[in-house]
Length: 384
Ligand SMILES: *Cc1c(COP(=O)(O)O)cnc(C)c1O
Image (cartoon, rainbow, N blue to C red; front, side):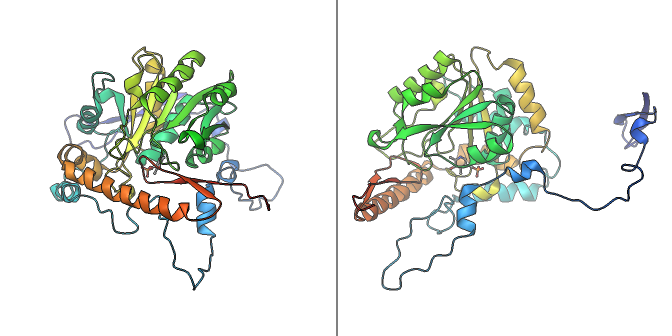
C-alpha cells in the first residue's frame, strides 16, 4: 500500500494535510461487473429499507375516515404540539435563534457530538448532586429520535434483544428491527396506572439482552412513575446487569400533584443513557435538537461506549448549528411561566379528553399524570 500526502487550503500558515492511501496491487482497481454477461439494471431497495416500518405513519398516512355529519368531532390531538396552535413556544426561544442566525457565527460544521459550549450548557442544566454531569457526558443529536438510534446502535448488536414497553412509543421497534435487533415487549399495567409488570419484565431478560428501555413520563400512557417504582425497575436492571436506555423527552412535563424523578438520580450503579431534547418541553419538534446524557458512575460503559457513541455521531455530524448556538439561551433564559403555562394547557386538555372518553361505553381511560397523552383500555363486551 502506497501513501501520498496532499496539501489543501495552502494559504494558511497551518495548512491542513490529507493523508491518502491508495491500493496499488491492482485488485481493488479492477473495474466492471462479471465478465461475459451483458450488465442489466437491477436496482432494488435494500434489506434494511424493507425492514424499516413505522406503524404510526403507516396508519396515519393511509387513513381515510368520513366524519359522521350528525355528530360533533372530538379532536384527540396528535403527538406534535404545534399542530393546533394552542401551544406556541416562548418568545425567548424564537429570539435566541434569530440572533444566532444574524450573527453569522454558526454556519460552519460543528464537532459531531456538538459544540463544547453547548454540551456544557446541557450538562449544567441537568447536573445535580445525585447524578453529576459534565460536558463530556453530553452528546448532541438530531432530535431525541437520533439520540435513541445512537444509544441502540452502540449498545446492541444484530441478533441481540432489547426490552421495550407495551403499550409504548413505536420508534423503538422501528429502529431496532431495521438494525436486526430483536424486540421483547414487557407489559405495562393499566390497573396500576401503567406501571411496569416487573415480574414479566425480569422474565424476559436473557443472555442476549442488550438494554432495557424505560420511557418516563410515558408516550402514549401519560403516566409518571413514582420514585419507589423507578427504584424497583433499577433493582431489576442491577440484578440482571442490563443497562438502561431512558427516554426522558417528557422529563419535567408532569401535572402539579406529582413529581418527575430522572431515573439516573436514583441509582449509583446502573449505567444509563438518558435521551431527551427540545421537541416537547420547548414545543419545537421541527428544530431537531436532542441529546444523550451518559450516566456511568461505576465506569461500566467506560471509554468503550463513549468512543462508540463518538464514532456513531460522526456518521451524521450532529444537529443543526443554528439551534446549537441558541441552546444555552433557550435552556437558561426561558421564563418559568412558560413551562407552567404549557402544563396547565396540557392538564386541561387531559381532563377534557378523560371526560370525553369516559362517556363512551366500553372505554376505560386511565387519568394521565403528565406528558401529552392519555391511554384507554377497551373493556371486553359480552357480545363480541
Ligand atoms: C416525540 C418523541 C420522541 C422523539 O423526539 P424528537 O426530538 O422529535 O426526535 C422520542 N420519544 C418519545 C417518547 C416521543 O414522544
